[in-house]
Image (cartoon, rainbow, N blue to C red; front, side):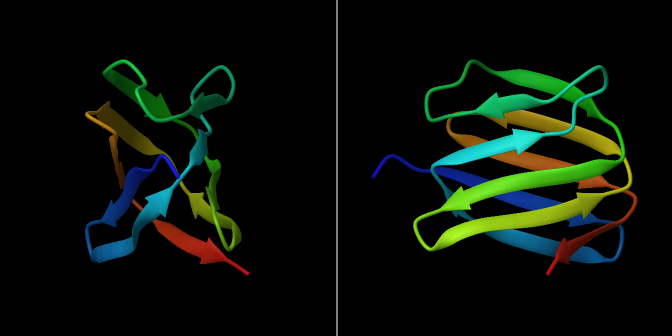
Length: 86
């Protein structure tokens, strides 16, 4: 399976780190989907959910707002607040 790595960080620490085959981000102005091989990107995020599709299923991560950097099959999200949604 082709994977990308997603890391979600807040000022208090790491909220999530793992591999995914698809990630959807709540970018300002709409959602953006990220697959392996995506072009480098720096995006402003609005409050909403990051959807992270793994082999075992979908993980939803709420973020207040923040920024996402996509580079070399790695997504780093920096947010003021985030939590995994059950």
